[in-house]
Amino acid sequence: MCGIVGYLGKRNSLLILLEGLKRLEYRGYDSCGIVLSNNEEIYLYKKVGKVSELEKEVKNKNLDGNIGLGHTRWATHGGINENNAHPHYDCSQNIFLIHNGIIENYQELKEKLKKKNHNFYSETDSEVFAHLIEEYYKNNDFENSVLKALKEIRGNFAFVIFNKKEKDKLIGARFSSPLILGLGKEEYILASDPSPISLITKNVVYLDDGDMVVVDKNKGVKIFSFLNEKEKPLVIYQINWQIDDIKKENYEHYMIKEIEEEPKAVFNTFYKRLNFERLETNLKELNEIKEKLKNIEKIVLTACGTAYYACLYGRYLFEEYLNLNSEAEIASELRYRNYPYNEKTLLIVISQSGETIDTLEALKIAKKRNVLIIGIINVPGSSITRLVDKVIYTQAGPELAVASTKAFLAQITSLIILMIYLAEIKGINLKNKKQIFEEIKIIPEKIKEIINRKEEIKKLAEDLICFKNFYFLGRKFQYPIALEGALKLKEIAYLHSEAYPAGEMKHGPIALIDENFPVFILAPKDSVYEKTISNLEEIKARKGKIILISDEAFEKADYVLKIPKSLEIFYPFLTVVPLHLFAYYFAKILGREIDRPRNLAKSVTVE
Image 1 (cartoon, helix red, strand yellow):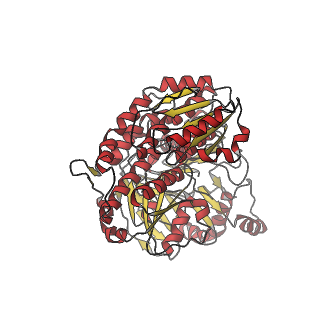
Image 2: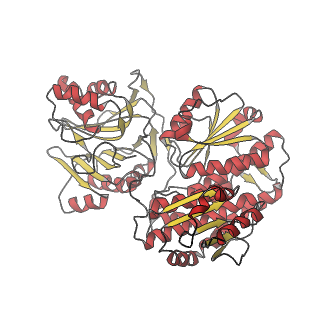
Image 3: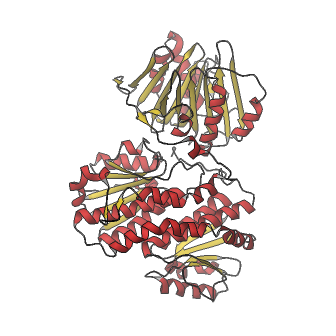
């Protein structure tokens, strides 16, 4: 989950490394560091904490160098201190590297290297690889030394490596952790995701598992597999992210900026994929697998975190409209199950980053069994997009706050479009089809209407700031939204919050209800409205404090957050927005680190 960036070119690498690390900081912010070099000097700086601390450290130093590495860490092996911060180096301080991932056999390798008189200064698994390269570098062949070292390690990793003795060269390698090469004019950049790369170029090469790339200032780029040592052609893509999309602009936090971008994320995801005159979809990206999709009898959706809640929403959606057996599975569990896939199963994997390790591993297992797989992904070129059969790209744009908001709405928008498409190719007469098209067209405006009332939600957060425990209840389509509301409070406010299907309340959890345990009840006027209101009555009878989110008023609620009326499948678009805003304002009042909450990273790329 760490962020890595390496630069080789004609500019001073310091500014590019610092700006690149700021854009990667959502991946880890326990510590950070840089190393850069000119023809004479090596400059190495590490700091515990955020990139801003590192920036202060080097601000008034006259550092220059056209080659360098930068790293922002999410700690796995070893505590949070400067010794464990990256970049790491070998005994001679010639080999410097940055690493994202885990070397599973590092202890075994470390003991072998100690016997060969290697001295270690950190507790990390990453440092071992620098010493392993050093051990093989006795023949003064940098590339071959890295290649031999790669063949000895087990685990998942992305490395960028620099050798003091070969200052015109960077080497990168990846296996189950993301690494992208950016090709500029007489300059190169390697990074965990496209955001730092967009600083210098839009031309990228997506590295695959087992790839090793050698970037030479004089000889250009060479890519080959360290698994079979066969050279590979350079396949160049263009990234579509704009630098302005990544800026915070005048917002205090990325999270509130991204919440306010939710209407745009929904609109951008559907507007080219729906023909509103003919009431049909335009999912050209799935045409090649249309015949296979016609025969699908079961859908399995899998993801982690917020994306898993989108899967739960999709399960209800496909069962309700397509009458298809549908299951939502947590990817970190699915990957260890002997799941009974067959030729009539469709697997849908959902991930904002396209790099989520558990989702990626569950996908690989299904792929070995020849399962048809569709990805719903936000980041083009990411690892999952290159393994699935077809991709539906959400159009949320870059999402940099650790807590996902706008990407979630883009994901459930994509599921609605896919549901309509499957109905079309299977010849299913879709109920409420005209109303669905009419409603999706105006749902962004309804979301805006709620966002425009953010001061009301801020006031609610102020009123409830003294409470330390919250319940979130919902039925059917609202249950995933209850889970999402509880997760957001956990993530950024560090509060105890739980979500349950509303009907499960009386099966145990109601024992906790009293006047000090507020309950969010999601009860729009849908098919289960009366049932959910009955649960509200049960809680009120036990003096529970109730926050109702509904398009209906109810006098027994302590607070009511009104939402516009809609169709049942679109109510989640409206009930989730006030929950995102509530969590944001609650965390802000408490003074939390909203964009970079403790212990978390956005893209979970280690198990």
